Image 1 (spheres, helix red, strand yellow):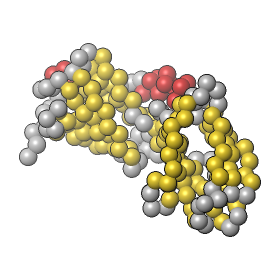
Image 2 (cartoon, rainbow, N blue to C red):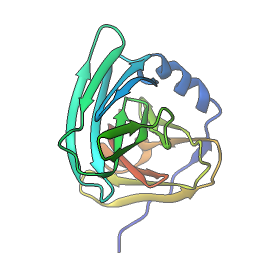
Image 3 (cartoon, helix red, strand yellow):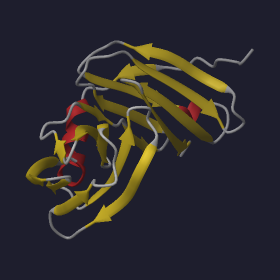
Image 4 (cartoon, rainbow, N blue to C red):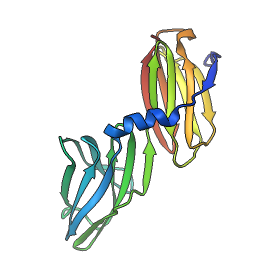
Length: 198
């Protein structure tokens, strides 16, 4: 059985402050430009870097690209080769993952202008072994946090309450080892990040 090490935890007060500080470079919005036949065009605003992927309903990856731009990101996708059905465009920035529905019927493709789901990524800030976790939890779902040592020993495991702003402070400087992997699961998505003790 894995050894669980107890250590002190405090609630973080500034959950939104960290999210807002990062939002300028990582938050984005999608503007649908036009749909013509099986071609969809859109603009992503408020971001200069984004990962775009298209999945089918079985979560099979069909297309993927990493895009950077000095201005807004404009994209046009020709979906002529896609059979009729439902697909999902996923746009992922440093801060969030948004999913948009694409319907292909006959000679027409339609992209939803509004995201059907948005998951904000957790933000970890490490200062001298004090790690602050902040997460904007729009769906107010429980958040699972696990911490592992560099040899994969579980050091911490807790499910945090389903609140809008999730914040915790971890003192990893008092834990055994010098590198720690945080595994954070929120709204069906798992995020992994490694931090050093100092």
